[in-house]
Length: 75
Image 1 (cartoon, rainbow, N blue to C red):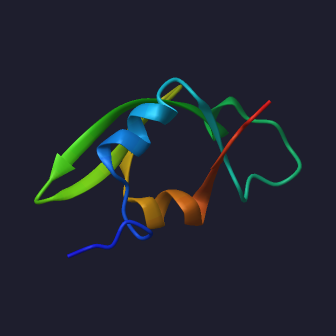
Image 2 (image 1 turned 90 degrees about the vertical axis):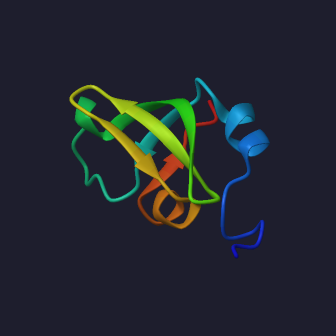
């Protein structure tokens, strides 16, 4: 079973809804594909995942996947 520090909770993702995320290893160029909006929460087999809508796709991330590749823009 996952501990709170390694997996999202439903409440944690709900508080992040509608925030913008950006890919961490995007390089120097601005590409719209690197930006997304947190749009949902998904529970699968007792694991909570964040749903992010990008301009060209919708993706779901575990907390470790999200933290490894993306960050939330706080501005």
